[in-house]
Image 1: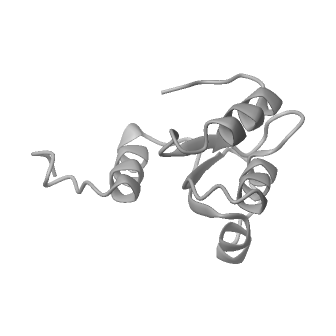
Image 2: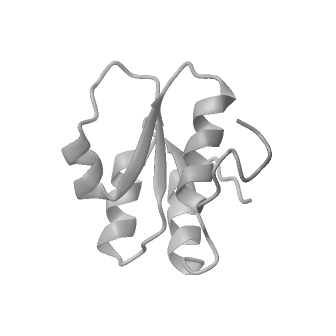
Length: 102
């Protein structure tokens, strides 16, 4: 796992390490590059890594916006860890049952 506090640094890292990153989780409201912009730039550069967005804003992110920008899931704040864990397992191909939990 790699964490970045600056979206510009995250973008460079993701573009340079595209084959070693399995999943991207980003907040929608980041300075410099928003989560949706980050997803779009990755998609435009041929990065096929799934992107999960986290949003605390009341703005609606449509399924069309997500599809156009390569976002596979958007989770609205506040949330418990359960939706995030479920989304990650689904994206990475592991169901909760396979992990011994439901």
